[in-house]
Length: 272
Image (cartoon, rainbow, N blue to C red; front, side, top):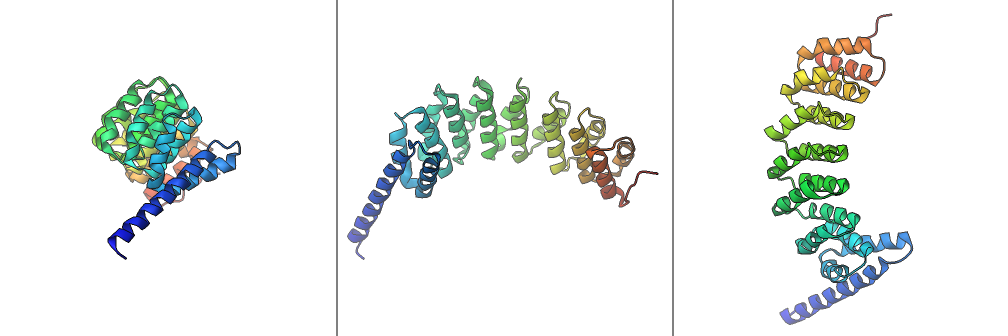
């Protein structure tokens, strides 16, 4: 096949893909949910060929189209969508902003760190700030750690939870220290996530804090702290785990039993 014929074929295929994209974009406004879902999936499958048609139509489109377009563009992951998605960060619709933030986190572009950090610090809606934390973690760039650590002082627990969870992918000494501090957070779920992260990374310096967390007011924090102590593998935790095993009866009791078995090789049982 000559170069001219090949170029003509490629142009024809691109034109066909663009027409398909236009067809599916029209279906995004259908009243039937399944039709919208199928159209979204088809646009993602079209990939880069769907990007320009989506950008052209969504820029002046409805709230619904901007929201769905942001979602699709994030899944496609084409950086040509960056200017459009950044423009949506000023959108008055909070759901559009949140979806744009998540989409930016899917573009695999560390240069977006500053933009997302600004959203995390300044957006008025907690769910949007939480989405920014998720996106910063998804970029897998440790330069985001200071921004996520600052977010652990956010007044909204859901934002603190998301910021802490994002640190699992960016584990530095600063992230480790922040997780240790989070064991004292006033929100039960933040403390639970902190114990979980410290176990995942087998953070030996957390030993004393985790032993203290065995007396936490929340049963699930106690249980996760016990499991983490088992993973860390330091036998100095045996005595506090034995106390919890003897004093508790629920999931924390079982977690202490599992941890003690890991540390000692013994199968603990309650005395009759």
